[in-house]
Amino acid sequence: MFDLIIRNANLPDGRRGIDVGIAGEKIAAVEAGLPGGAREVIDATNRLVSPSFVDPHFHMDATLSLGLPRMNVSGTLLEGIALWGELRPLLTREALVERALAYCDLAVSQGLLHIRTHVDTSDPRLVTVEAMLEVKERVAPYIDLQLVAFPQDGYYRASEGVESLERALDMGVDIVGGIPHFERTMQEGAMSVEALCRIAADRGLPVDMHCDETDDPMSRHIETLAAQTVRFGLKGRVAGSHLTSMHSMDNYYVSKLIPLMAEAEINVIPNPLINIMLQGRHDTYPKRRGMTRVRELMAAGLNVSFGHDCVMDPWYSMGSGDMLEVGHMAIHVAQMSGVEDKKKIFDALTVNSAKALGLEDYGLDAGCHADLVILQAEDVPEALRLKPTRLAVLRRGKVIARTVPKITELQIEGRPERIDAGYNPTARR
Image (cartoon, rainbow, N blue to C red; front, side, top):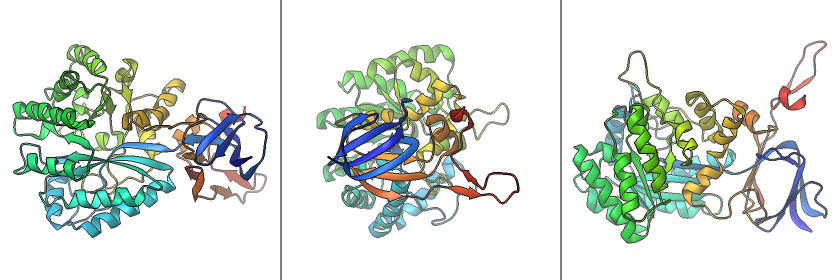
């Protein structure tokens, strides 16, 4: 007797008509025609059942603050940074918590149950840290929330940046962040990478740095980050986020850089929606795409995952908390539209991101946490194409969100009366 069985599920690896048996908080069995009963049965009706989505890069302290205290008129990265500087002194713990909890509600509805968020430590008040620590505790029953101590204005550049980051870690933030390309000089940027990796090694913490989020091909802090990762014994525990300068680097240099990154086992986290929106702003034509070299990094064996980064904040006026929207953009920007490409893109929203976050017992195997999402789509390519309705979201074996299927009623003589939004002609041949 199971607590719950999901019957007739299609899985991301291509298996169809599979039953998923859940006992307590864990997946107990995954097989076709699973024998036995359950207290509750969900018929997936040959829909895609996936592990819950993972966002490895987000800014929850800024989310849903669009229009405060004014709009980003130019839509640029630099105006967004300036605008956040205007908003930061006005932030209160209560408002930060309220907006973050509202975003977490949205995330759950999208099947997004694991998020790593960067928390600005540049304001010595550290009200952002206090707020996000409270949010982490409050959402723990339904979202795994990881916090990165992020010196937004620069570890050395901010007047109390060094001390504030240390205090944030002492308060309970458990990942070391950085932004070396935003320091005053290239030398200070390199120094900040070394100092922050040393802190992580001394404290036994992971590292996740905003690294080379620029069109400047000479911004090469990822090289320093990889080297310091090896030096301090941090292999596999370090993430380089954005890495947009790699889009502009010459191929010879990259042919040296990627093997160094692979040696250091760097986790690579591009943010397709934001990278394509904010980079290349100084270009006329030809105009750079601004996203890092996803295909080449994957081919070299690096763990590549995709982040949402922003939703309705000073940098990005759009966003929905839907990781499939992120993957949809990645397909276009990286020009990864092949059958195997789409599987890799989907992995970058799920299993790769889970690896970057160090999540345990994640996936669809027996023994994994029953954190699942049932989508109104038959397979991975259809899910990435349609960004479909999440019919049900499960956390530790319990349904925590449901959405009715999207069905259109046609009133056209001689045509079907109902159209399922998940229609996939190739899957029905």
